[in-house]
Image (cartoon, rainbow, N blue to C red; front, side, top):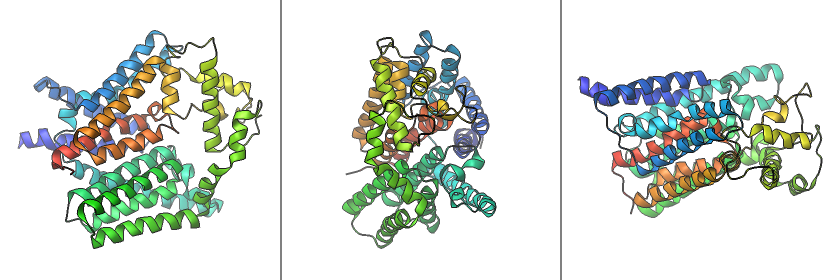
Length: 422
């Protein structure tokens, strides 16, 4: 009984607690990570064994790269805090055998999905109460929706999308006997994406889902339930995009070519300039190229991990971007915005080490997929790799923990179910 409890139940419980705590204020996930670390240290004390998949080298290389930058960083305190924030990557890589490899991955993701659906309905209920006061439909969408969680909607959307893919993969490729609950959870997680309203995640999730359906029909032929479910997803996606004014407007904003051209041509913007999500990210790309071209900037070493904000703020000041209500300082307005691109963030902060880190992530992702054709793993990695184009998600605790856990869960998922593709 002790062995069953110690080797199976405890790691599963700890992982559920970590996953369901990620959307909450960060102190909750910090507490659950601490419990996991204590359990891991105890397991190492009992029997020190380190076994992990090759992809976990990505996490170890990342931890070493950010730690190395402490030697030349512009801000040792910020870099040290960044190194500490990367500890989950190290913990789940060297503790893969003890924390992940032997658990029932589908049970974990199913329980987590139920909890996330409850989160979604609670957020909608709270949005309704705010709507009765403000009468603004925006309370049901995007950052306004996730305001009670004190979280950016994009980081909640990526969590919903990942769990959605775990369930969809199980429905299509693992089990022939799927329950109504599993179909319902998969559909609800997809529906909540339209309220979370992240253009990138909605688009990538829909594209991956289509690929999954195509592969299913190619490998297994037509199935009545799966066919109806796939049509429901496709039709629901099309109707929601076209009939929902908030989501439709967010997608429409990315098509203004005049604004995109202006981002790269104007020499002055001013504090009243209106930025969309896309134009701001393109402007930050422009800032990146100008910083890298500056002869006074050491592009070989970079600024040091998490130490690039000051140099980016100098660009914001040069183009006179909005500083917040006070109109002064560098702790409000656009002056708290990072590069919103993990690739640019790594290169500007880690220099050559950042380039090598990006290449290692891509290499181990492709190598892991080619080794066993793990569709679920590559789908999860595609979400992260595309998200990295619009978010510096490894500067946020929610992003770090998600990246530390879910790719390894996808690898373990295949190993536990012994799923083989043709």
